[in-house]
Image (cartoon, rainbow, N blue to C red):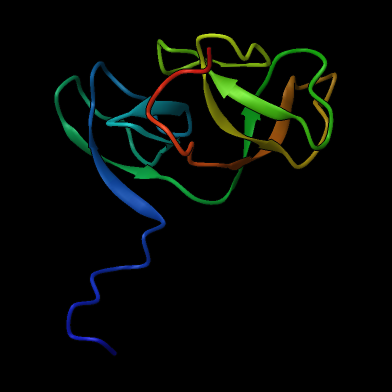
Length: 114
């Protein structure tokens, strides 16, 4: 193994801009991901930036849809304008739970969609 290998890259360390709860989607430090453990405002925490997660999504999310995260950084939406790509739906939204499986995608730019 290369001497400069650090880790798999599935997680990064982020600094909480507010109190964070494990399992929630977030956009922080220009990364999209799912919070590993609860974190207080200003604390460093582990952010999962790869993988598929069951997350609350808005009505109408179908398998294959792109979902966005609002600029506030905590709510998934289907609205493109002013938001960031977060991931793609692996499953359609479950009508009972309001959740779908979402594969995290890192946006190619740090700018919100116009």
